[in-house]
Length: 416
Image (cartoon, rainbow, N blue to C red; front, side, top):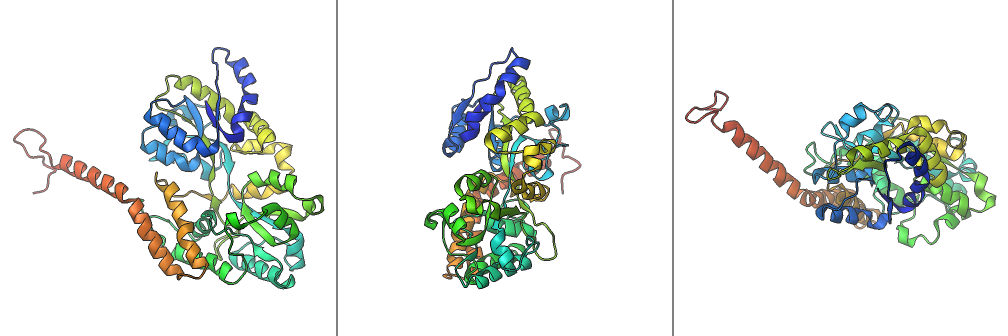
């Protein structure tokens, strides 16, 4: 098994019980930094040196399925006692299904919610979390007003793609066309979301800062430089470690506000990591046993306590460490309201282009409509090979349809 980052260090602590149950199976774990994971997996695939199983980011599933690296798991899951999707968050489970076939089992889940300074919002007259875009923008405005411009409503780093994509998904944007062959960012749903997003900067409610320009996120949050920050569960532990005691009781999390007339709450990203078995493995049955073991609610609860990754099994959330934690409550609500990004292998490239094209609009250099037109053109170039491959497939299928059923006899279904 390959495992990445901190999870690679911790997963070995779960294995003694697995070995006790399956003494005939010896598990070797190779830890790899997350920064090298994607490239190492692709290199190993080319060199036919992939491990038996590994976690991969949910957004990578389409890419590795497209190159034929992943073993279908549908049949195994259907015969499993509990790894069947019934105890999973539907939005996360769907990220592992392509063409009706299951390729991964969610291991831990991830999404984005709003971290906020409840004292600053209370001072601004917002005692309850914002439920809609209108309420959210009003809260940001009031924070800016009552602090006389000292505090920004929210920190929305200009070099992140997640925030505008989340807003687009909340409006029902498809992001790509139905076939996943061209960009659809100029369509009204995403265009409206982009105007709202860019408007937050142009109104001065969020600073025009990239992540590299933020000196110290935690210190600035504690100082009250901004009142809200959209981020993921990894920051729960960081906030508790890095914020001073004076503000530890002054922050909370809330689900993402919904587009007016659609919620609440609004949808957020379906992220996290899933366990996959590689098609070239000679030990698929043993690998599946390990996948099942790591998916047990008891192991997921223990994994959360060790590393802080949120469990993929709903029943694991009954653990008091999760059920009684106010900082985690918003994540539990949000996980029932998720949307997946397009399942195309090129998505990792596309999402980066989103912020690259929107940043000039944020800084007032180009209109939003121009930024989205340029974004669609860029995405169309990225997807050119996909269009060519689909075109070739259709041509082959059409030729096969026209081919005579037997020598000298034209098929009755062929057009005249």
